[in-house]
Image 1 (cartoon, helix red, strand yellow):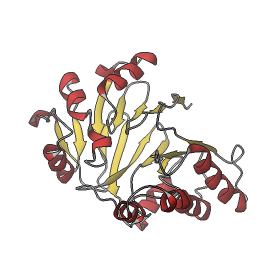
Image 2 (cartoon, helix red, strand yellow; image 1 turned 180 degrees about the horizontal axis):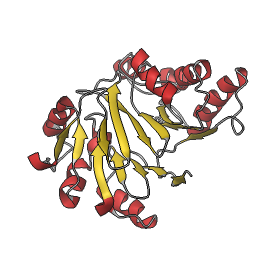
Image 3 (cartoon, rainbow, N blue to C red; image 1 turned 180 degrees about the vertical axis):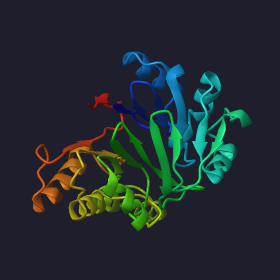
Image 4 (cartoon, rainbow, N blue to C red; image 1 turned 90 degrees about the vertical axis):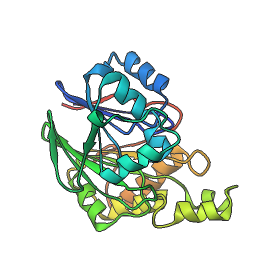
Length: 263
C-alpha cells in the first residue's frame, strides 16, 4: 500500500500492489507526469480519479488525464455538472468516462472500497472520501469550513488521515487579503484553521490513528512549521505524543511529498 500527494494544487495517489487511484487532479499535467516518472509509476495503471469538488486547484488536470489515459472519473452528479461548467477544465469529459457517486453509498473498485460523504465548503458540491483497502482505512478531508458530525464520523474511523489545516488565525486577520475574502476563508463553508483542526483532533483522537497529514496549507496565511506545532502542542496537552502515538506531517505546497509505503 502506498500514498503520495501532489504539490501546489491537490492530487493524491493511493495504490495497492494491483490497483491505483487518484483523489483530485488539480496539479498541472506536466507536473503529474514528472512525479509519476520520478517514482517509476505508470499513469496507464490508474483505475480511477475521484473528485472532491469543482474548484480549479482540484480539477485542473482531470479532463486531460482522463481522456489521454482512458481513466474514468468518479464524482457526484452535481460535482460533474460543476466540472462541465468550469473554465479551468479545458478538456471536458466524454460520457463514457463519467461515473456517478452517491454520498455514503460505498462502491467497490479493485482492492478499494470507496465512500464519499458530505463536507461543508463552497464548491458546487463537496465531499470527502473514506477509502478502505488491505485492512487499512484512509480518510481525505482536504477542504471544509468546519467539522460536521458526518465528517467527524469518518475522521474517527481513519488509520491514516489527510486533514485540512489551511490558515493561522492571526496571519489571516493581519494579512493583506480584503475583508470579504478573509470572511469567506474563516466562514463555516470556507476552510479549517490550524487551531480548529488541532482542537478537534486533540479532543476526538482515534486510538488507531497512525498517520496524520495536514494538507491544503495557505501560501499567504500559514506555513508548515506553524501548522505542525499548533497540532503537536494540542495533542501533547491531551497526553498524545507525536512520534510515539502517531506520525504527523504538514504537507508543503511547493513540492510533492515522498511516497509513503505501508505494510
